[in-house]
Image (cartoon, rainbow, N blue to C red; front, side, top):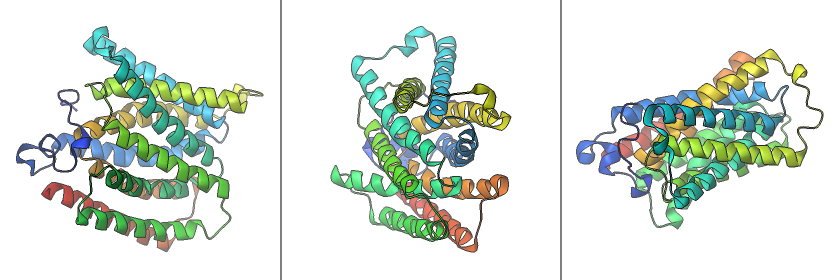
Length: 320
């Protein structure tokens, strides 16, 4: 992504901002499409990675290691490529990145990791798909009302979510796991929304590094409060859990979260939120392929509705 950090275009400007949609406001740039593709595919696979990691690892400790290591690696790369001065931020910017990092990675990802120890990865991804609904509610509350077509796209996506979720709730499902995912979705939506309205570092990669460190420290603190370190036996952690954690650090965090952070500053928020429609399709397929989680006809139908919803929202953003 050669244009990352070249300019800051806040998603708070709403759909149709010229910087987000390209010259004349008519097209979404190729860089935005590339970043969306990364978030669509990579984050869809992280549900599987999390599910495998927590098989033999304490949930929040694994999240803490993931984000602390990824954040430190990103800091190192930025200091090497741009110089230490590029990492300097104001107090207000630091406060904003800490708040957003906690909302996204402790309230959002932390609760997701805990829930995936109780419910299938595909179902977790399906429940997270309510994020765009929360985003629309937040935009409405703050006076940035989405267009009618965008609302239709969101409603269509929710129909797909309902179809997809029906099969998941037909068996034995942990109620606490479902509640955790719903709270996590709200926390993620609030963090995403606020990141477009708070004073953030001009370089989204710098913002990502601070957010991951804040999120990692937050997960570590909650893990210690929960007592996850007691009885921890690293020898009992399976090889595939270590591999999953490595994948989450490098691909899920360094690649995926960085792409997402850039999109929040460079593309319309309603367009960025469409990842929540595509990720479940990827997650359900991988859960079926790798973990033998059931893939039913209703899930295939719901997946098709979800893709249609993405097309509606994306086409709306291109016209605005």
